[in-house]
Image (cartoon, rainbow, N blue to C red):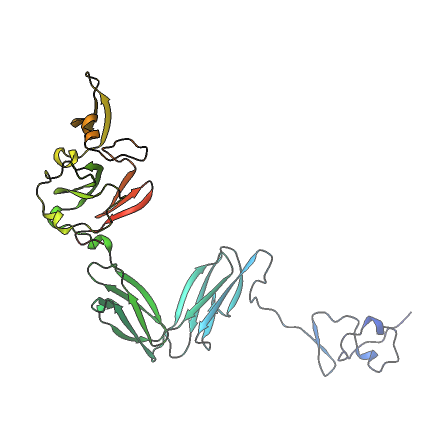
Length: 350
């Protein structure tokens, strides 16, 4: 019967498989072929290894990373109640975070993570303050900071300041700024064209009604513009596409336009014209309103005798249909064959 001597000393640790036959080594009798879940002690004996504690799920192919970056750097970061700055989670997991540091307001929250996320958390200081100033253009614009009218405010570092800058006839600007250091905001307001477009007693703009030929011996074109309380004919040379100067301010004060030999100004808004032949074989140009009622008619002989303007096809014309008027609020834009050629932006327009 074979006898195996007892092993009572294991402080030599595990023996490499390559040394299993080296009985001549001094530590041979102090080693083990396999030492699993035990820890060799210096005294030669073994003790069971300690237990383990769950810390975090290790990343897998479909895992994503949630990471918190704190300002100031010395702040402590906790994710799901554990002190750590980074955690691998499954897509769609909800995680909580808390960031704290002495002398700062603690920040905490909850996030649903759907992709790799780096969250930067700036702690608001309890002692340090910074100054935020606003320099508006124009200089007389009103400024509100955190809801109160003022141009300068001192707040805790890393807090957020809401600002509002406004003035009549200008486009309001609002937003917020991080108060991480002393800073001055230069805010330039842009003019609100709609607010500037005012026509006084004429009321609001309705739109461009028609572009017609006008005149008796002097041949011109007319932009016929309708307002809530009146109708304005803007007369310009027949050889031009559009007026090349601003509207004469005196036109807004006229009460009668009979001085212009224009069917539009005499009879009202024209929607379209049609050339027809009457019973005497005389060609007539008929003017119609939006309800297809005849406003007036002029015979072709008269048109030719007056040397009436011609269109691009060389035909005598009373109504130019290559123009389109687009009214947006109180601003009128006139297009010729799709190209912008003229704008009206109030009584004092450019």
